[in-house]
Image (cartoon, rainbow, N blue to C red):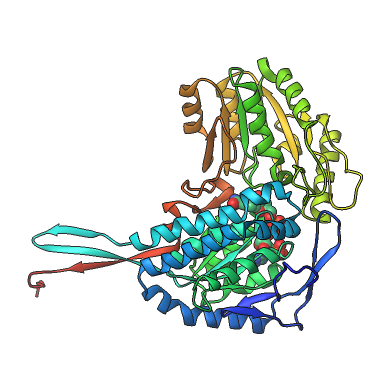
Length: 486
Ligand code: NDP
């Protein structure tokens, strides 16, 4: 490892770092410079086996402890994360290239929020008492699922690890987490901190590698649940593989979410929403409102204000806290975004901002805005996962809603308007799992997060996630004699 902050070895299994240099080499690249900053190795079958065996061995005892005890450990981990927020944020910036200005407030801190929230909830996870008449009754026992596998995308490596680990562990499960091979570093620190906080060995293991490491985890019969954050094509494959073993799943997948701006909206607020919903994390956010429908009366004013605000973007060294726009995560993702921009130009959309690579090392591309985008264009239909905003015009509410929903995705949707009756009407009509009124992309742990249609199955965060990391055992209790027909 070349940076002192970086984890000690490739994997974290059974409570400690683990190396196996016979695995396929995995170089970690700093997106802001293109330099290799760490050399890891993908998990071999032997590492995967150790992870599964240790997780299974530890899980039953963990589930048998009181929720209060489990919760205390999670809350202690949250405190350690907050104490080390600066160092963890620097690591997250190395992993992803996201500006420190963002990582200081959105990554380790949101991971700590999840650990704190589920730590607080752990003691209150119970079943129900169900009176049935004639003195008979039933009760339910809320049980852990067993061994859960978490598979992460590369945009929020710390947050994704914590959003999966915290509810899983609170409910008494063990977890094996496979980060994206593009951003393998941060989850190792989460594992290290959980053990420091008192988590018994084996309950949160991290194994590195590409999809080829995730796939055998998904199909292993000793795994009870799979939670994936990733693209729709990967989600389809992983869901199908998990279904063959009748496993529980959570699928947090991609989107092409709409943001609808009505004439009466506060202009600056709507522009802020569009900036947050398209350019935070260089546009690499699943719930981004990349189809910005702007009502005709406000369209030119919106575009002018947006262009003016974009001139305030400070693109540069992500470790400089003044920087508010960093590179793409990888050369590959940069290439994808460049191809979509070329496609938008070819399709006849009007490029009103950005569109070019930034003249410096690393994987930088300017925040880009297309206007006059129509629903049939590829850039309006496919998830780009980069800083490319499509602005579409509309005349009335019914049209905006129908076009907003005209997509296979259903992760998020937002509306900006001064008319709150209309805002709630729009939200009722949106085919999306997560909606925003006069805001965009807020994801507090207290609020369920997830998608409908092709954007996913299940919910992360809030009390809703408990149902996806536990199951109910029903018990009928007869108080009188049990009778039979013969
Ligand atoms: P991918 O779908 O390419 O990968 C997601 C994860 O799945 C990676 O760890 C990947 O490994 C792994 N994987 C790939 N194939 C398999 C397989 N057959 N079996 C098991 N695991 C597999 O997504 P990206 O990493 O490119 O992330 C971007 C996508 O994630 C976007 O579509 C985005 O919208 C979505 N996303 C969704 C979020 C949500 O909460 N809804 C949040 C963040 C992102 P590897 O890549 O290392 O090969």
